[in-house]
Length: 489
Image 1 (cartoon, rainbow, N blue to C red):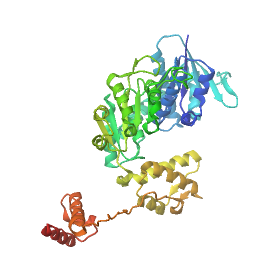
Image 2 (tube, helix red, strand yellow; image 1 turned 120 degrees about the horizontal axis):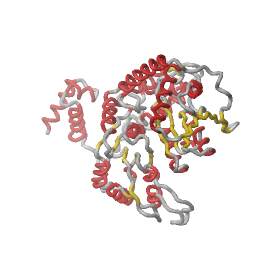
Image 3 (cartoon, one colour; image 1 turned 90 degrees about the vertical axis):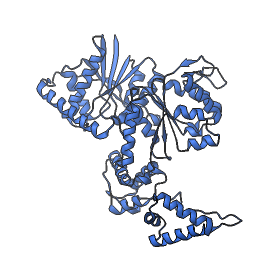
Image 4 (cartoon, rainbow, N blue to C red; image 1 turned 45 degrees about the horizontal axis):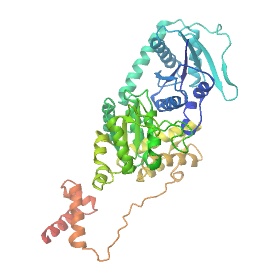
């Protein structure tokens, strides 16, 4: 008989990156199942579900992992959570058909509302299943008390009404977000355009390159592409190319067989194998040495990998890459292969720096502050002086820097208001230019100043008034100096 485990994914199942296992993986290590259905109430949990998928692929290869949406904006609202869970369970039952199946439901993950709804669903006869709970203290235990004292769920009309309301609620939510999975915060026109491009590119199985400075959120955009694509129920594997040793490149990317070299004490699946069927995200691809680029190109052309000491095998991977470097310039400098460039840059996204998204800075800061408030169960907000200080900074470290500063400001504040003094910003980049004067000197009047005037004019699209403003000059002064330069030349 086929054995299937159902479980919500909750906050306690989201620490695999920190080498901490939550309830779902603890259950899988103690009990054997053929399939796992991960229910999620919000798309923000999809990356964590993907981590569990990748873990299971390595450690429980026979287990099939599925994602099942049970969406509700408020995970504590019985009026939306219960109908969403009923729809999800019915979808699973339909997917499994008439096969002989033994269902087990873990009530540990998720909100208390979800825990209670599992009891109602089983008692209401929606699904025949064994209920279990898991904790570090008592391990895994079946919920064995009689459910006869629970009232029967018999108001079908009420349930259908709530299901209709839930459906409308989710349609409105999705239309507002533009994307099914969307953790990209921002309302600046450049971000709206970015989301629209992601939505469009996600539908087509082509390589995408993401450009932008460090800390702008390139991996977040890559995840958004993956989770809005047909591959979303397959692994998303992120690799920082700058951290890969040249000597271990083939082992890390293509895998190796036990005994293929001295330290190969066991078989190892490379990044391509783990991501098979899903998406491989190569961050900072510009950091790959030319020798690695050649090997990567061969795999992309043949869709075949050969583990060290093993036989070649076909793979099906969508490649998304990113870099904060200019690959076109690297091609001119002969440090990046032109043929690899055309393989990976078939569609392109650019994430603007935070300093160019002034309207989003406070939006993001408040978002991060709200997150820390929820995590620490103590609500805080910024004072107007604090917001002014945040807006004044250039944020050369972009969103990564902002998030770090907001976290520390939350800790520094002694009450529910984060003041300007609580915001500690380390100036790692000077806003002033460090100008080196060559030994032979410079021709300020005939070369430097004319170049600056022309650059300002170009930046202002030929508008002399705007160009003057850029240089901090009065329009008539700028025109006079520009005329003098032209007369001289």
